[in-house]
Length: 192
Image: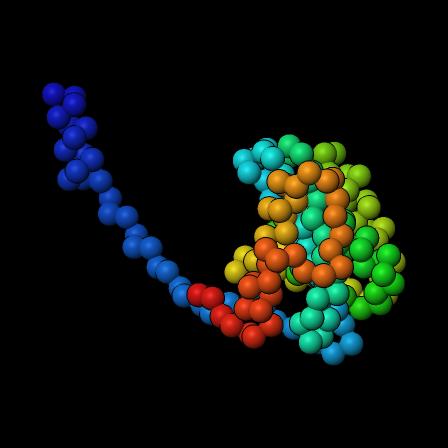
């Protein structure tokens, strides 16, 4: 009888679920404003924690390639992989004496952490301190959260980083793996 009551409750008396409302929005990567460069970074962790990599790229105001990177991180969380990638991207900007950069990430948690000077985390403190120090060395810098669909080039570089032999690679020209994605972005095409 108990099983019968549970069955009746589940199929006849359970409250109706609210319908899921899906909003379709066109998303695309956009060029930086005149006089600025754009840094897109991403971290990838296959599991949480899992095998991780980081990557990113810098593009000019016409959307052209300036530099890119990929890092093999090892086993870590997605949060730390995102911070590694941000740190590497900021360091690349500082090393190239970039004066004005828009930084875009698809990890809102990282954008929020960078914006909150009081945030601390024992596991991320060294990486976060490095990021904050590098940010201070760039005269003009803006951070923006973007959707994953607008960050596909950085995502591909991050995944490459997790699988590569070398610990860190700087790309002076784009790797073949992202050429189609770069063209897609350069042409201003949208994804839903």
